[in-house]
Length: 401
Image (cartoon, rainbow, N blue to C red; front, top):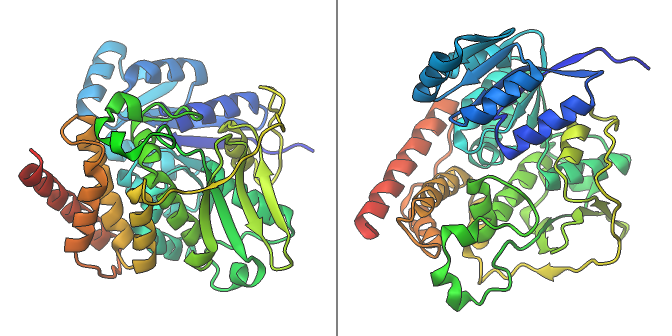
């Protein structure tokens, strides 16, 4: 069977997800091609990507980086136009030739590009959990008014989707009743990060260098810190709630150090079905890009079945996970508050201005002192996010600096 060539835009092409996406597209070049890519500051790698993948447009969102890049290479490299900023992102998102947009920009700043992709009726492959945590209900509400599709490419949520579809169910994002009636429990796995075996009394000595050493995955610095605090797993619990709308009490995380099983779904008849694969992000990305077909060939290594272990999450050791579950229970704008406070705290930790142990303490304080409200529009969400970031910075400067 012959499929029409599909054009893909990658927001955040120099990050780990962006790089993996480009590798998948390269392997599936008979049916996928790159229309646009974007980066913020990593222009050295960006230049190499332009030369290798020949996108129609390449967007740089940092003004200084853009100016320096254009000064050195000009505004066109072969057939690729170099464009700037939010207007540039709009070009590579909304163009009628684009079928799918991979949202791999880290953090809440991905909100406006995803909103535009939804309004432009694109298939959005979302690797950004922060905007679903912060504005999930608003995003789902907008999505349902368009022809756009949202497909998760986080390994855990993509695994949940694959299990659900393989079990004969449909993908009905955030359906009010469908998954509640057909699924008993969702479970996502966590490697435990670099500190799962470290005595909690030694957490005070954790450095940035220690925290970014993830035992399994090669990720960017922000998500590596989130994995070390296990905030990442808490955010993923909220994301699963947004996508599949199952009671929070029936969504859990478990420690699975081998990272070979990514998710499990328990049905009411007592059956539990898991998704297993090597820890390779090209697998969920390729599935989402050719959804619901499987055309990617994984030739990296044979799957090793020899070791599987499971443990409960040591919640007292990782308070960020507990805070995320609290936010999920509280609802309203609590996810937004949690995420904004976390992003700022991680930023200060990466700059060696606060300690690893300060991160959950700061987030907890901001959650306790912020107002929980419902937002009816994206602008109020964006304004509230900015307010929480300012409050968090002020608190850190007063308390820790």
